[in-house]
Image 1 (cartoon, rainbow, N blue to C red):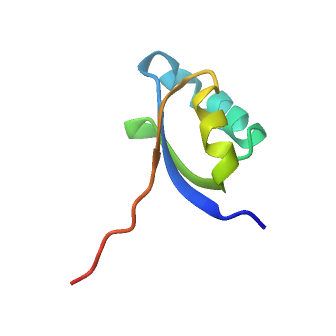
Image 2 (image 1 turned 60 degrees about the horizontal axis):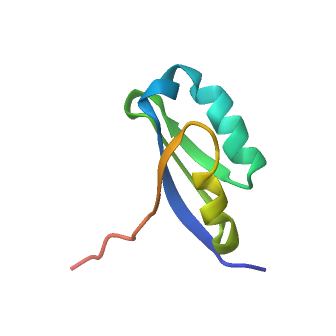
Length: 73
């Protein structure tokens, strides 16, 4: 099984009123949604490494970032 990558997807300002539709499109593109942060226009979730680039092509997506684990000291 391909390694799953945690991502943070930023929604374009002009599509904030349509977040549920953007989330459905992200799921159809392969994203397993963990949380929808409507107040800040972001969605977190996981997807196989090969699918990360496809998320950028979803209408309403401004940016896709790989989530980094916070180091502990």
